[in-house]
Length: 405
Image (cartoon, rainbow, N blue to C red; front, top):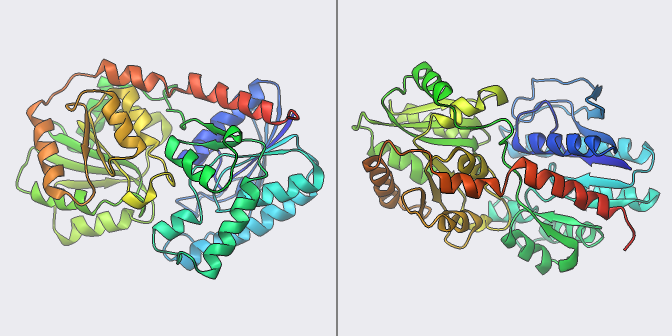
């Protein structure tokens, strides 16, 4: 089959959607399919990073789109980048040959609509892989007024494409429920989380020691937030907790990654003169085992309004490592579901957004058990979300999407 993948990010970009789409592309190519990927020619977090406009990589035909690379310093900059990508993607897709299946992720927002239009003109199935829901996310973040003309128009466009999908991939039961509320038929929805990077990430004692020594963390209790720093993952209470621990030399907070809120974390540490906060950029895949293994307590954060809109995919790498984690977010959410499945409050901890005292207490309680051994129950749970389990399953879903009902 001829399969087209469309997303703003793709290999060799390091953001989560790029890595997962790369894994899927390789899985499809290994299954014997002809795979083309359309993505941006600029890095997602670092727009100064440029990639070749056309590339053949491990049997995958990659076509990259020019965007101005204005970055994320202001919303208008992101909107211009999104708009240029959208228009150039439309030009490319409309002149490409027919594909049996077009898989669209959700960056930039509503890109699945473009895939639907192209497929309806040329034929073929469309499979949206919903990494986040927009304009729902924009409304929840306060960027778009609920019920306004723009929101109602974008929602209508989104729902039009979703209802015409051959299959649609939801990441958890809450997202699936939102899709059904939008009129997507339950039998069209396939619910599976994004897989962990267990083929590349594992608990590494030696790399942990090297990473901790490199960043002055030896003999420290390291509380780590690693991943995208965005309004969907509010860190104000975590930063306030770090301030509470400023006189405790045993505790250090490590923020790794990027995103629109990353500079806010850096500014907080600078303005408060906190020496117990370190900020590092995204780590390359070859160093990810060392950086993630360096934590004594991982943080997974999700804002209350974003249930069913975004998904805490970082939690699967954490489960694979077997390191304790603290989920900060609403009680009815996928993160809480996973914490409760462990039946072990010492490993899967839960606190609520804004509860600084509760977060501080959970960190103190985790420190009382420090050092904790790798948790085999967590690793067994993590195995359910492994690349070997979930990626082949998604390949089969896409193959089935091309078959007439």
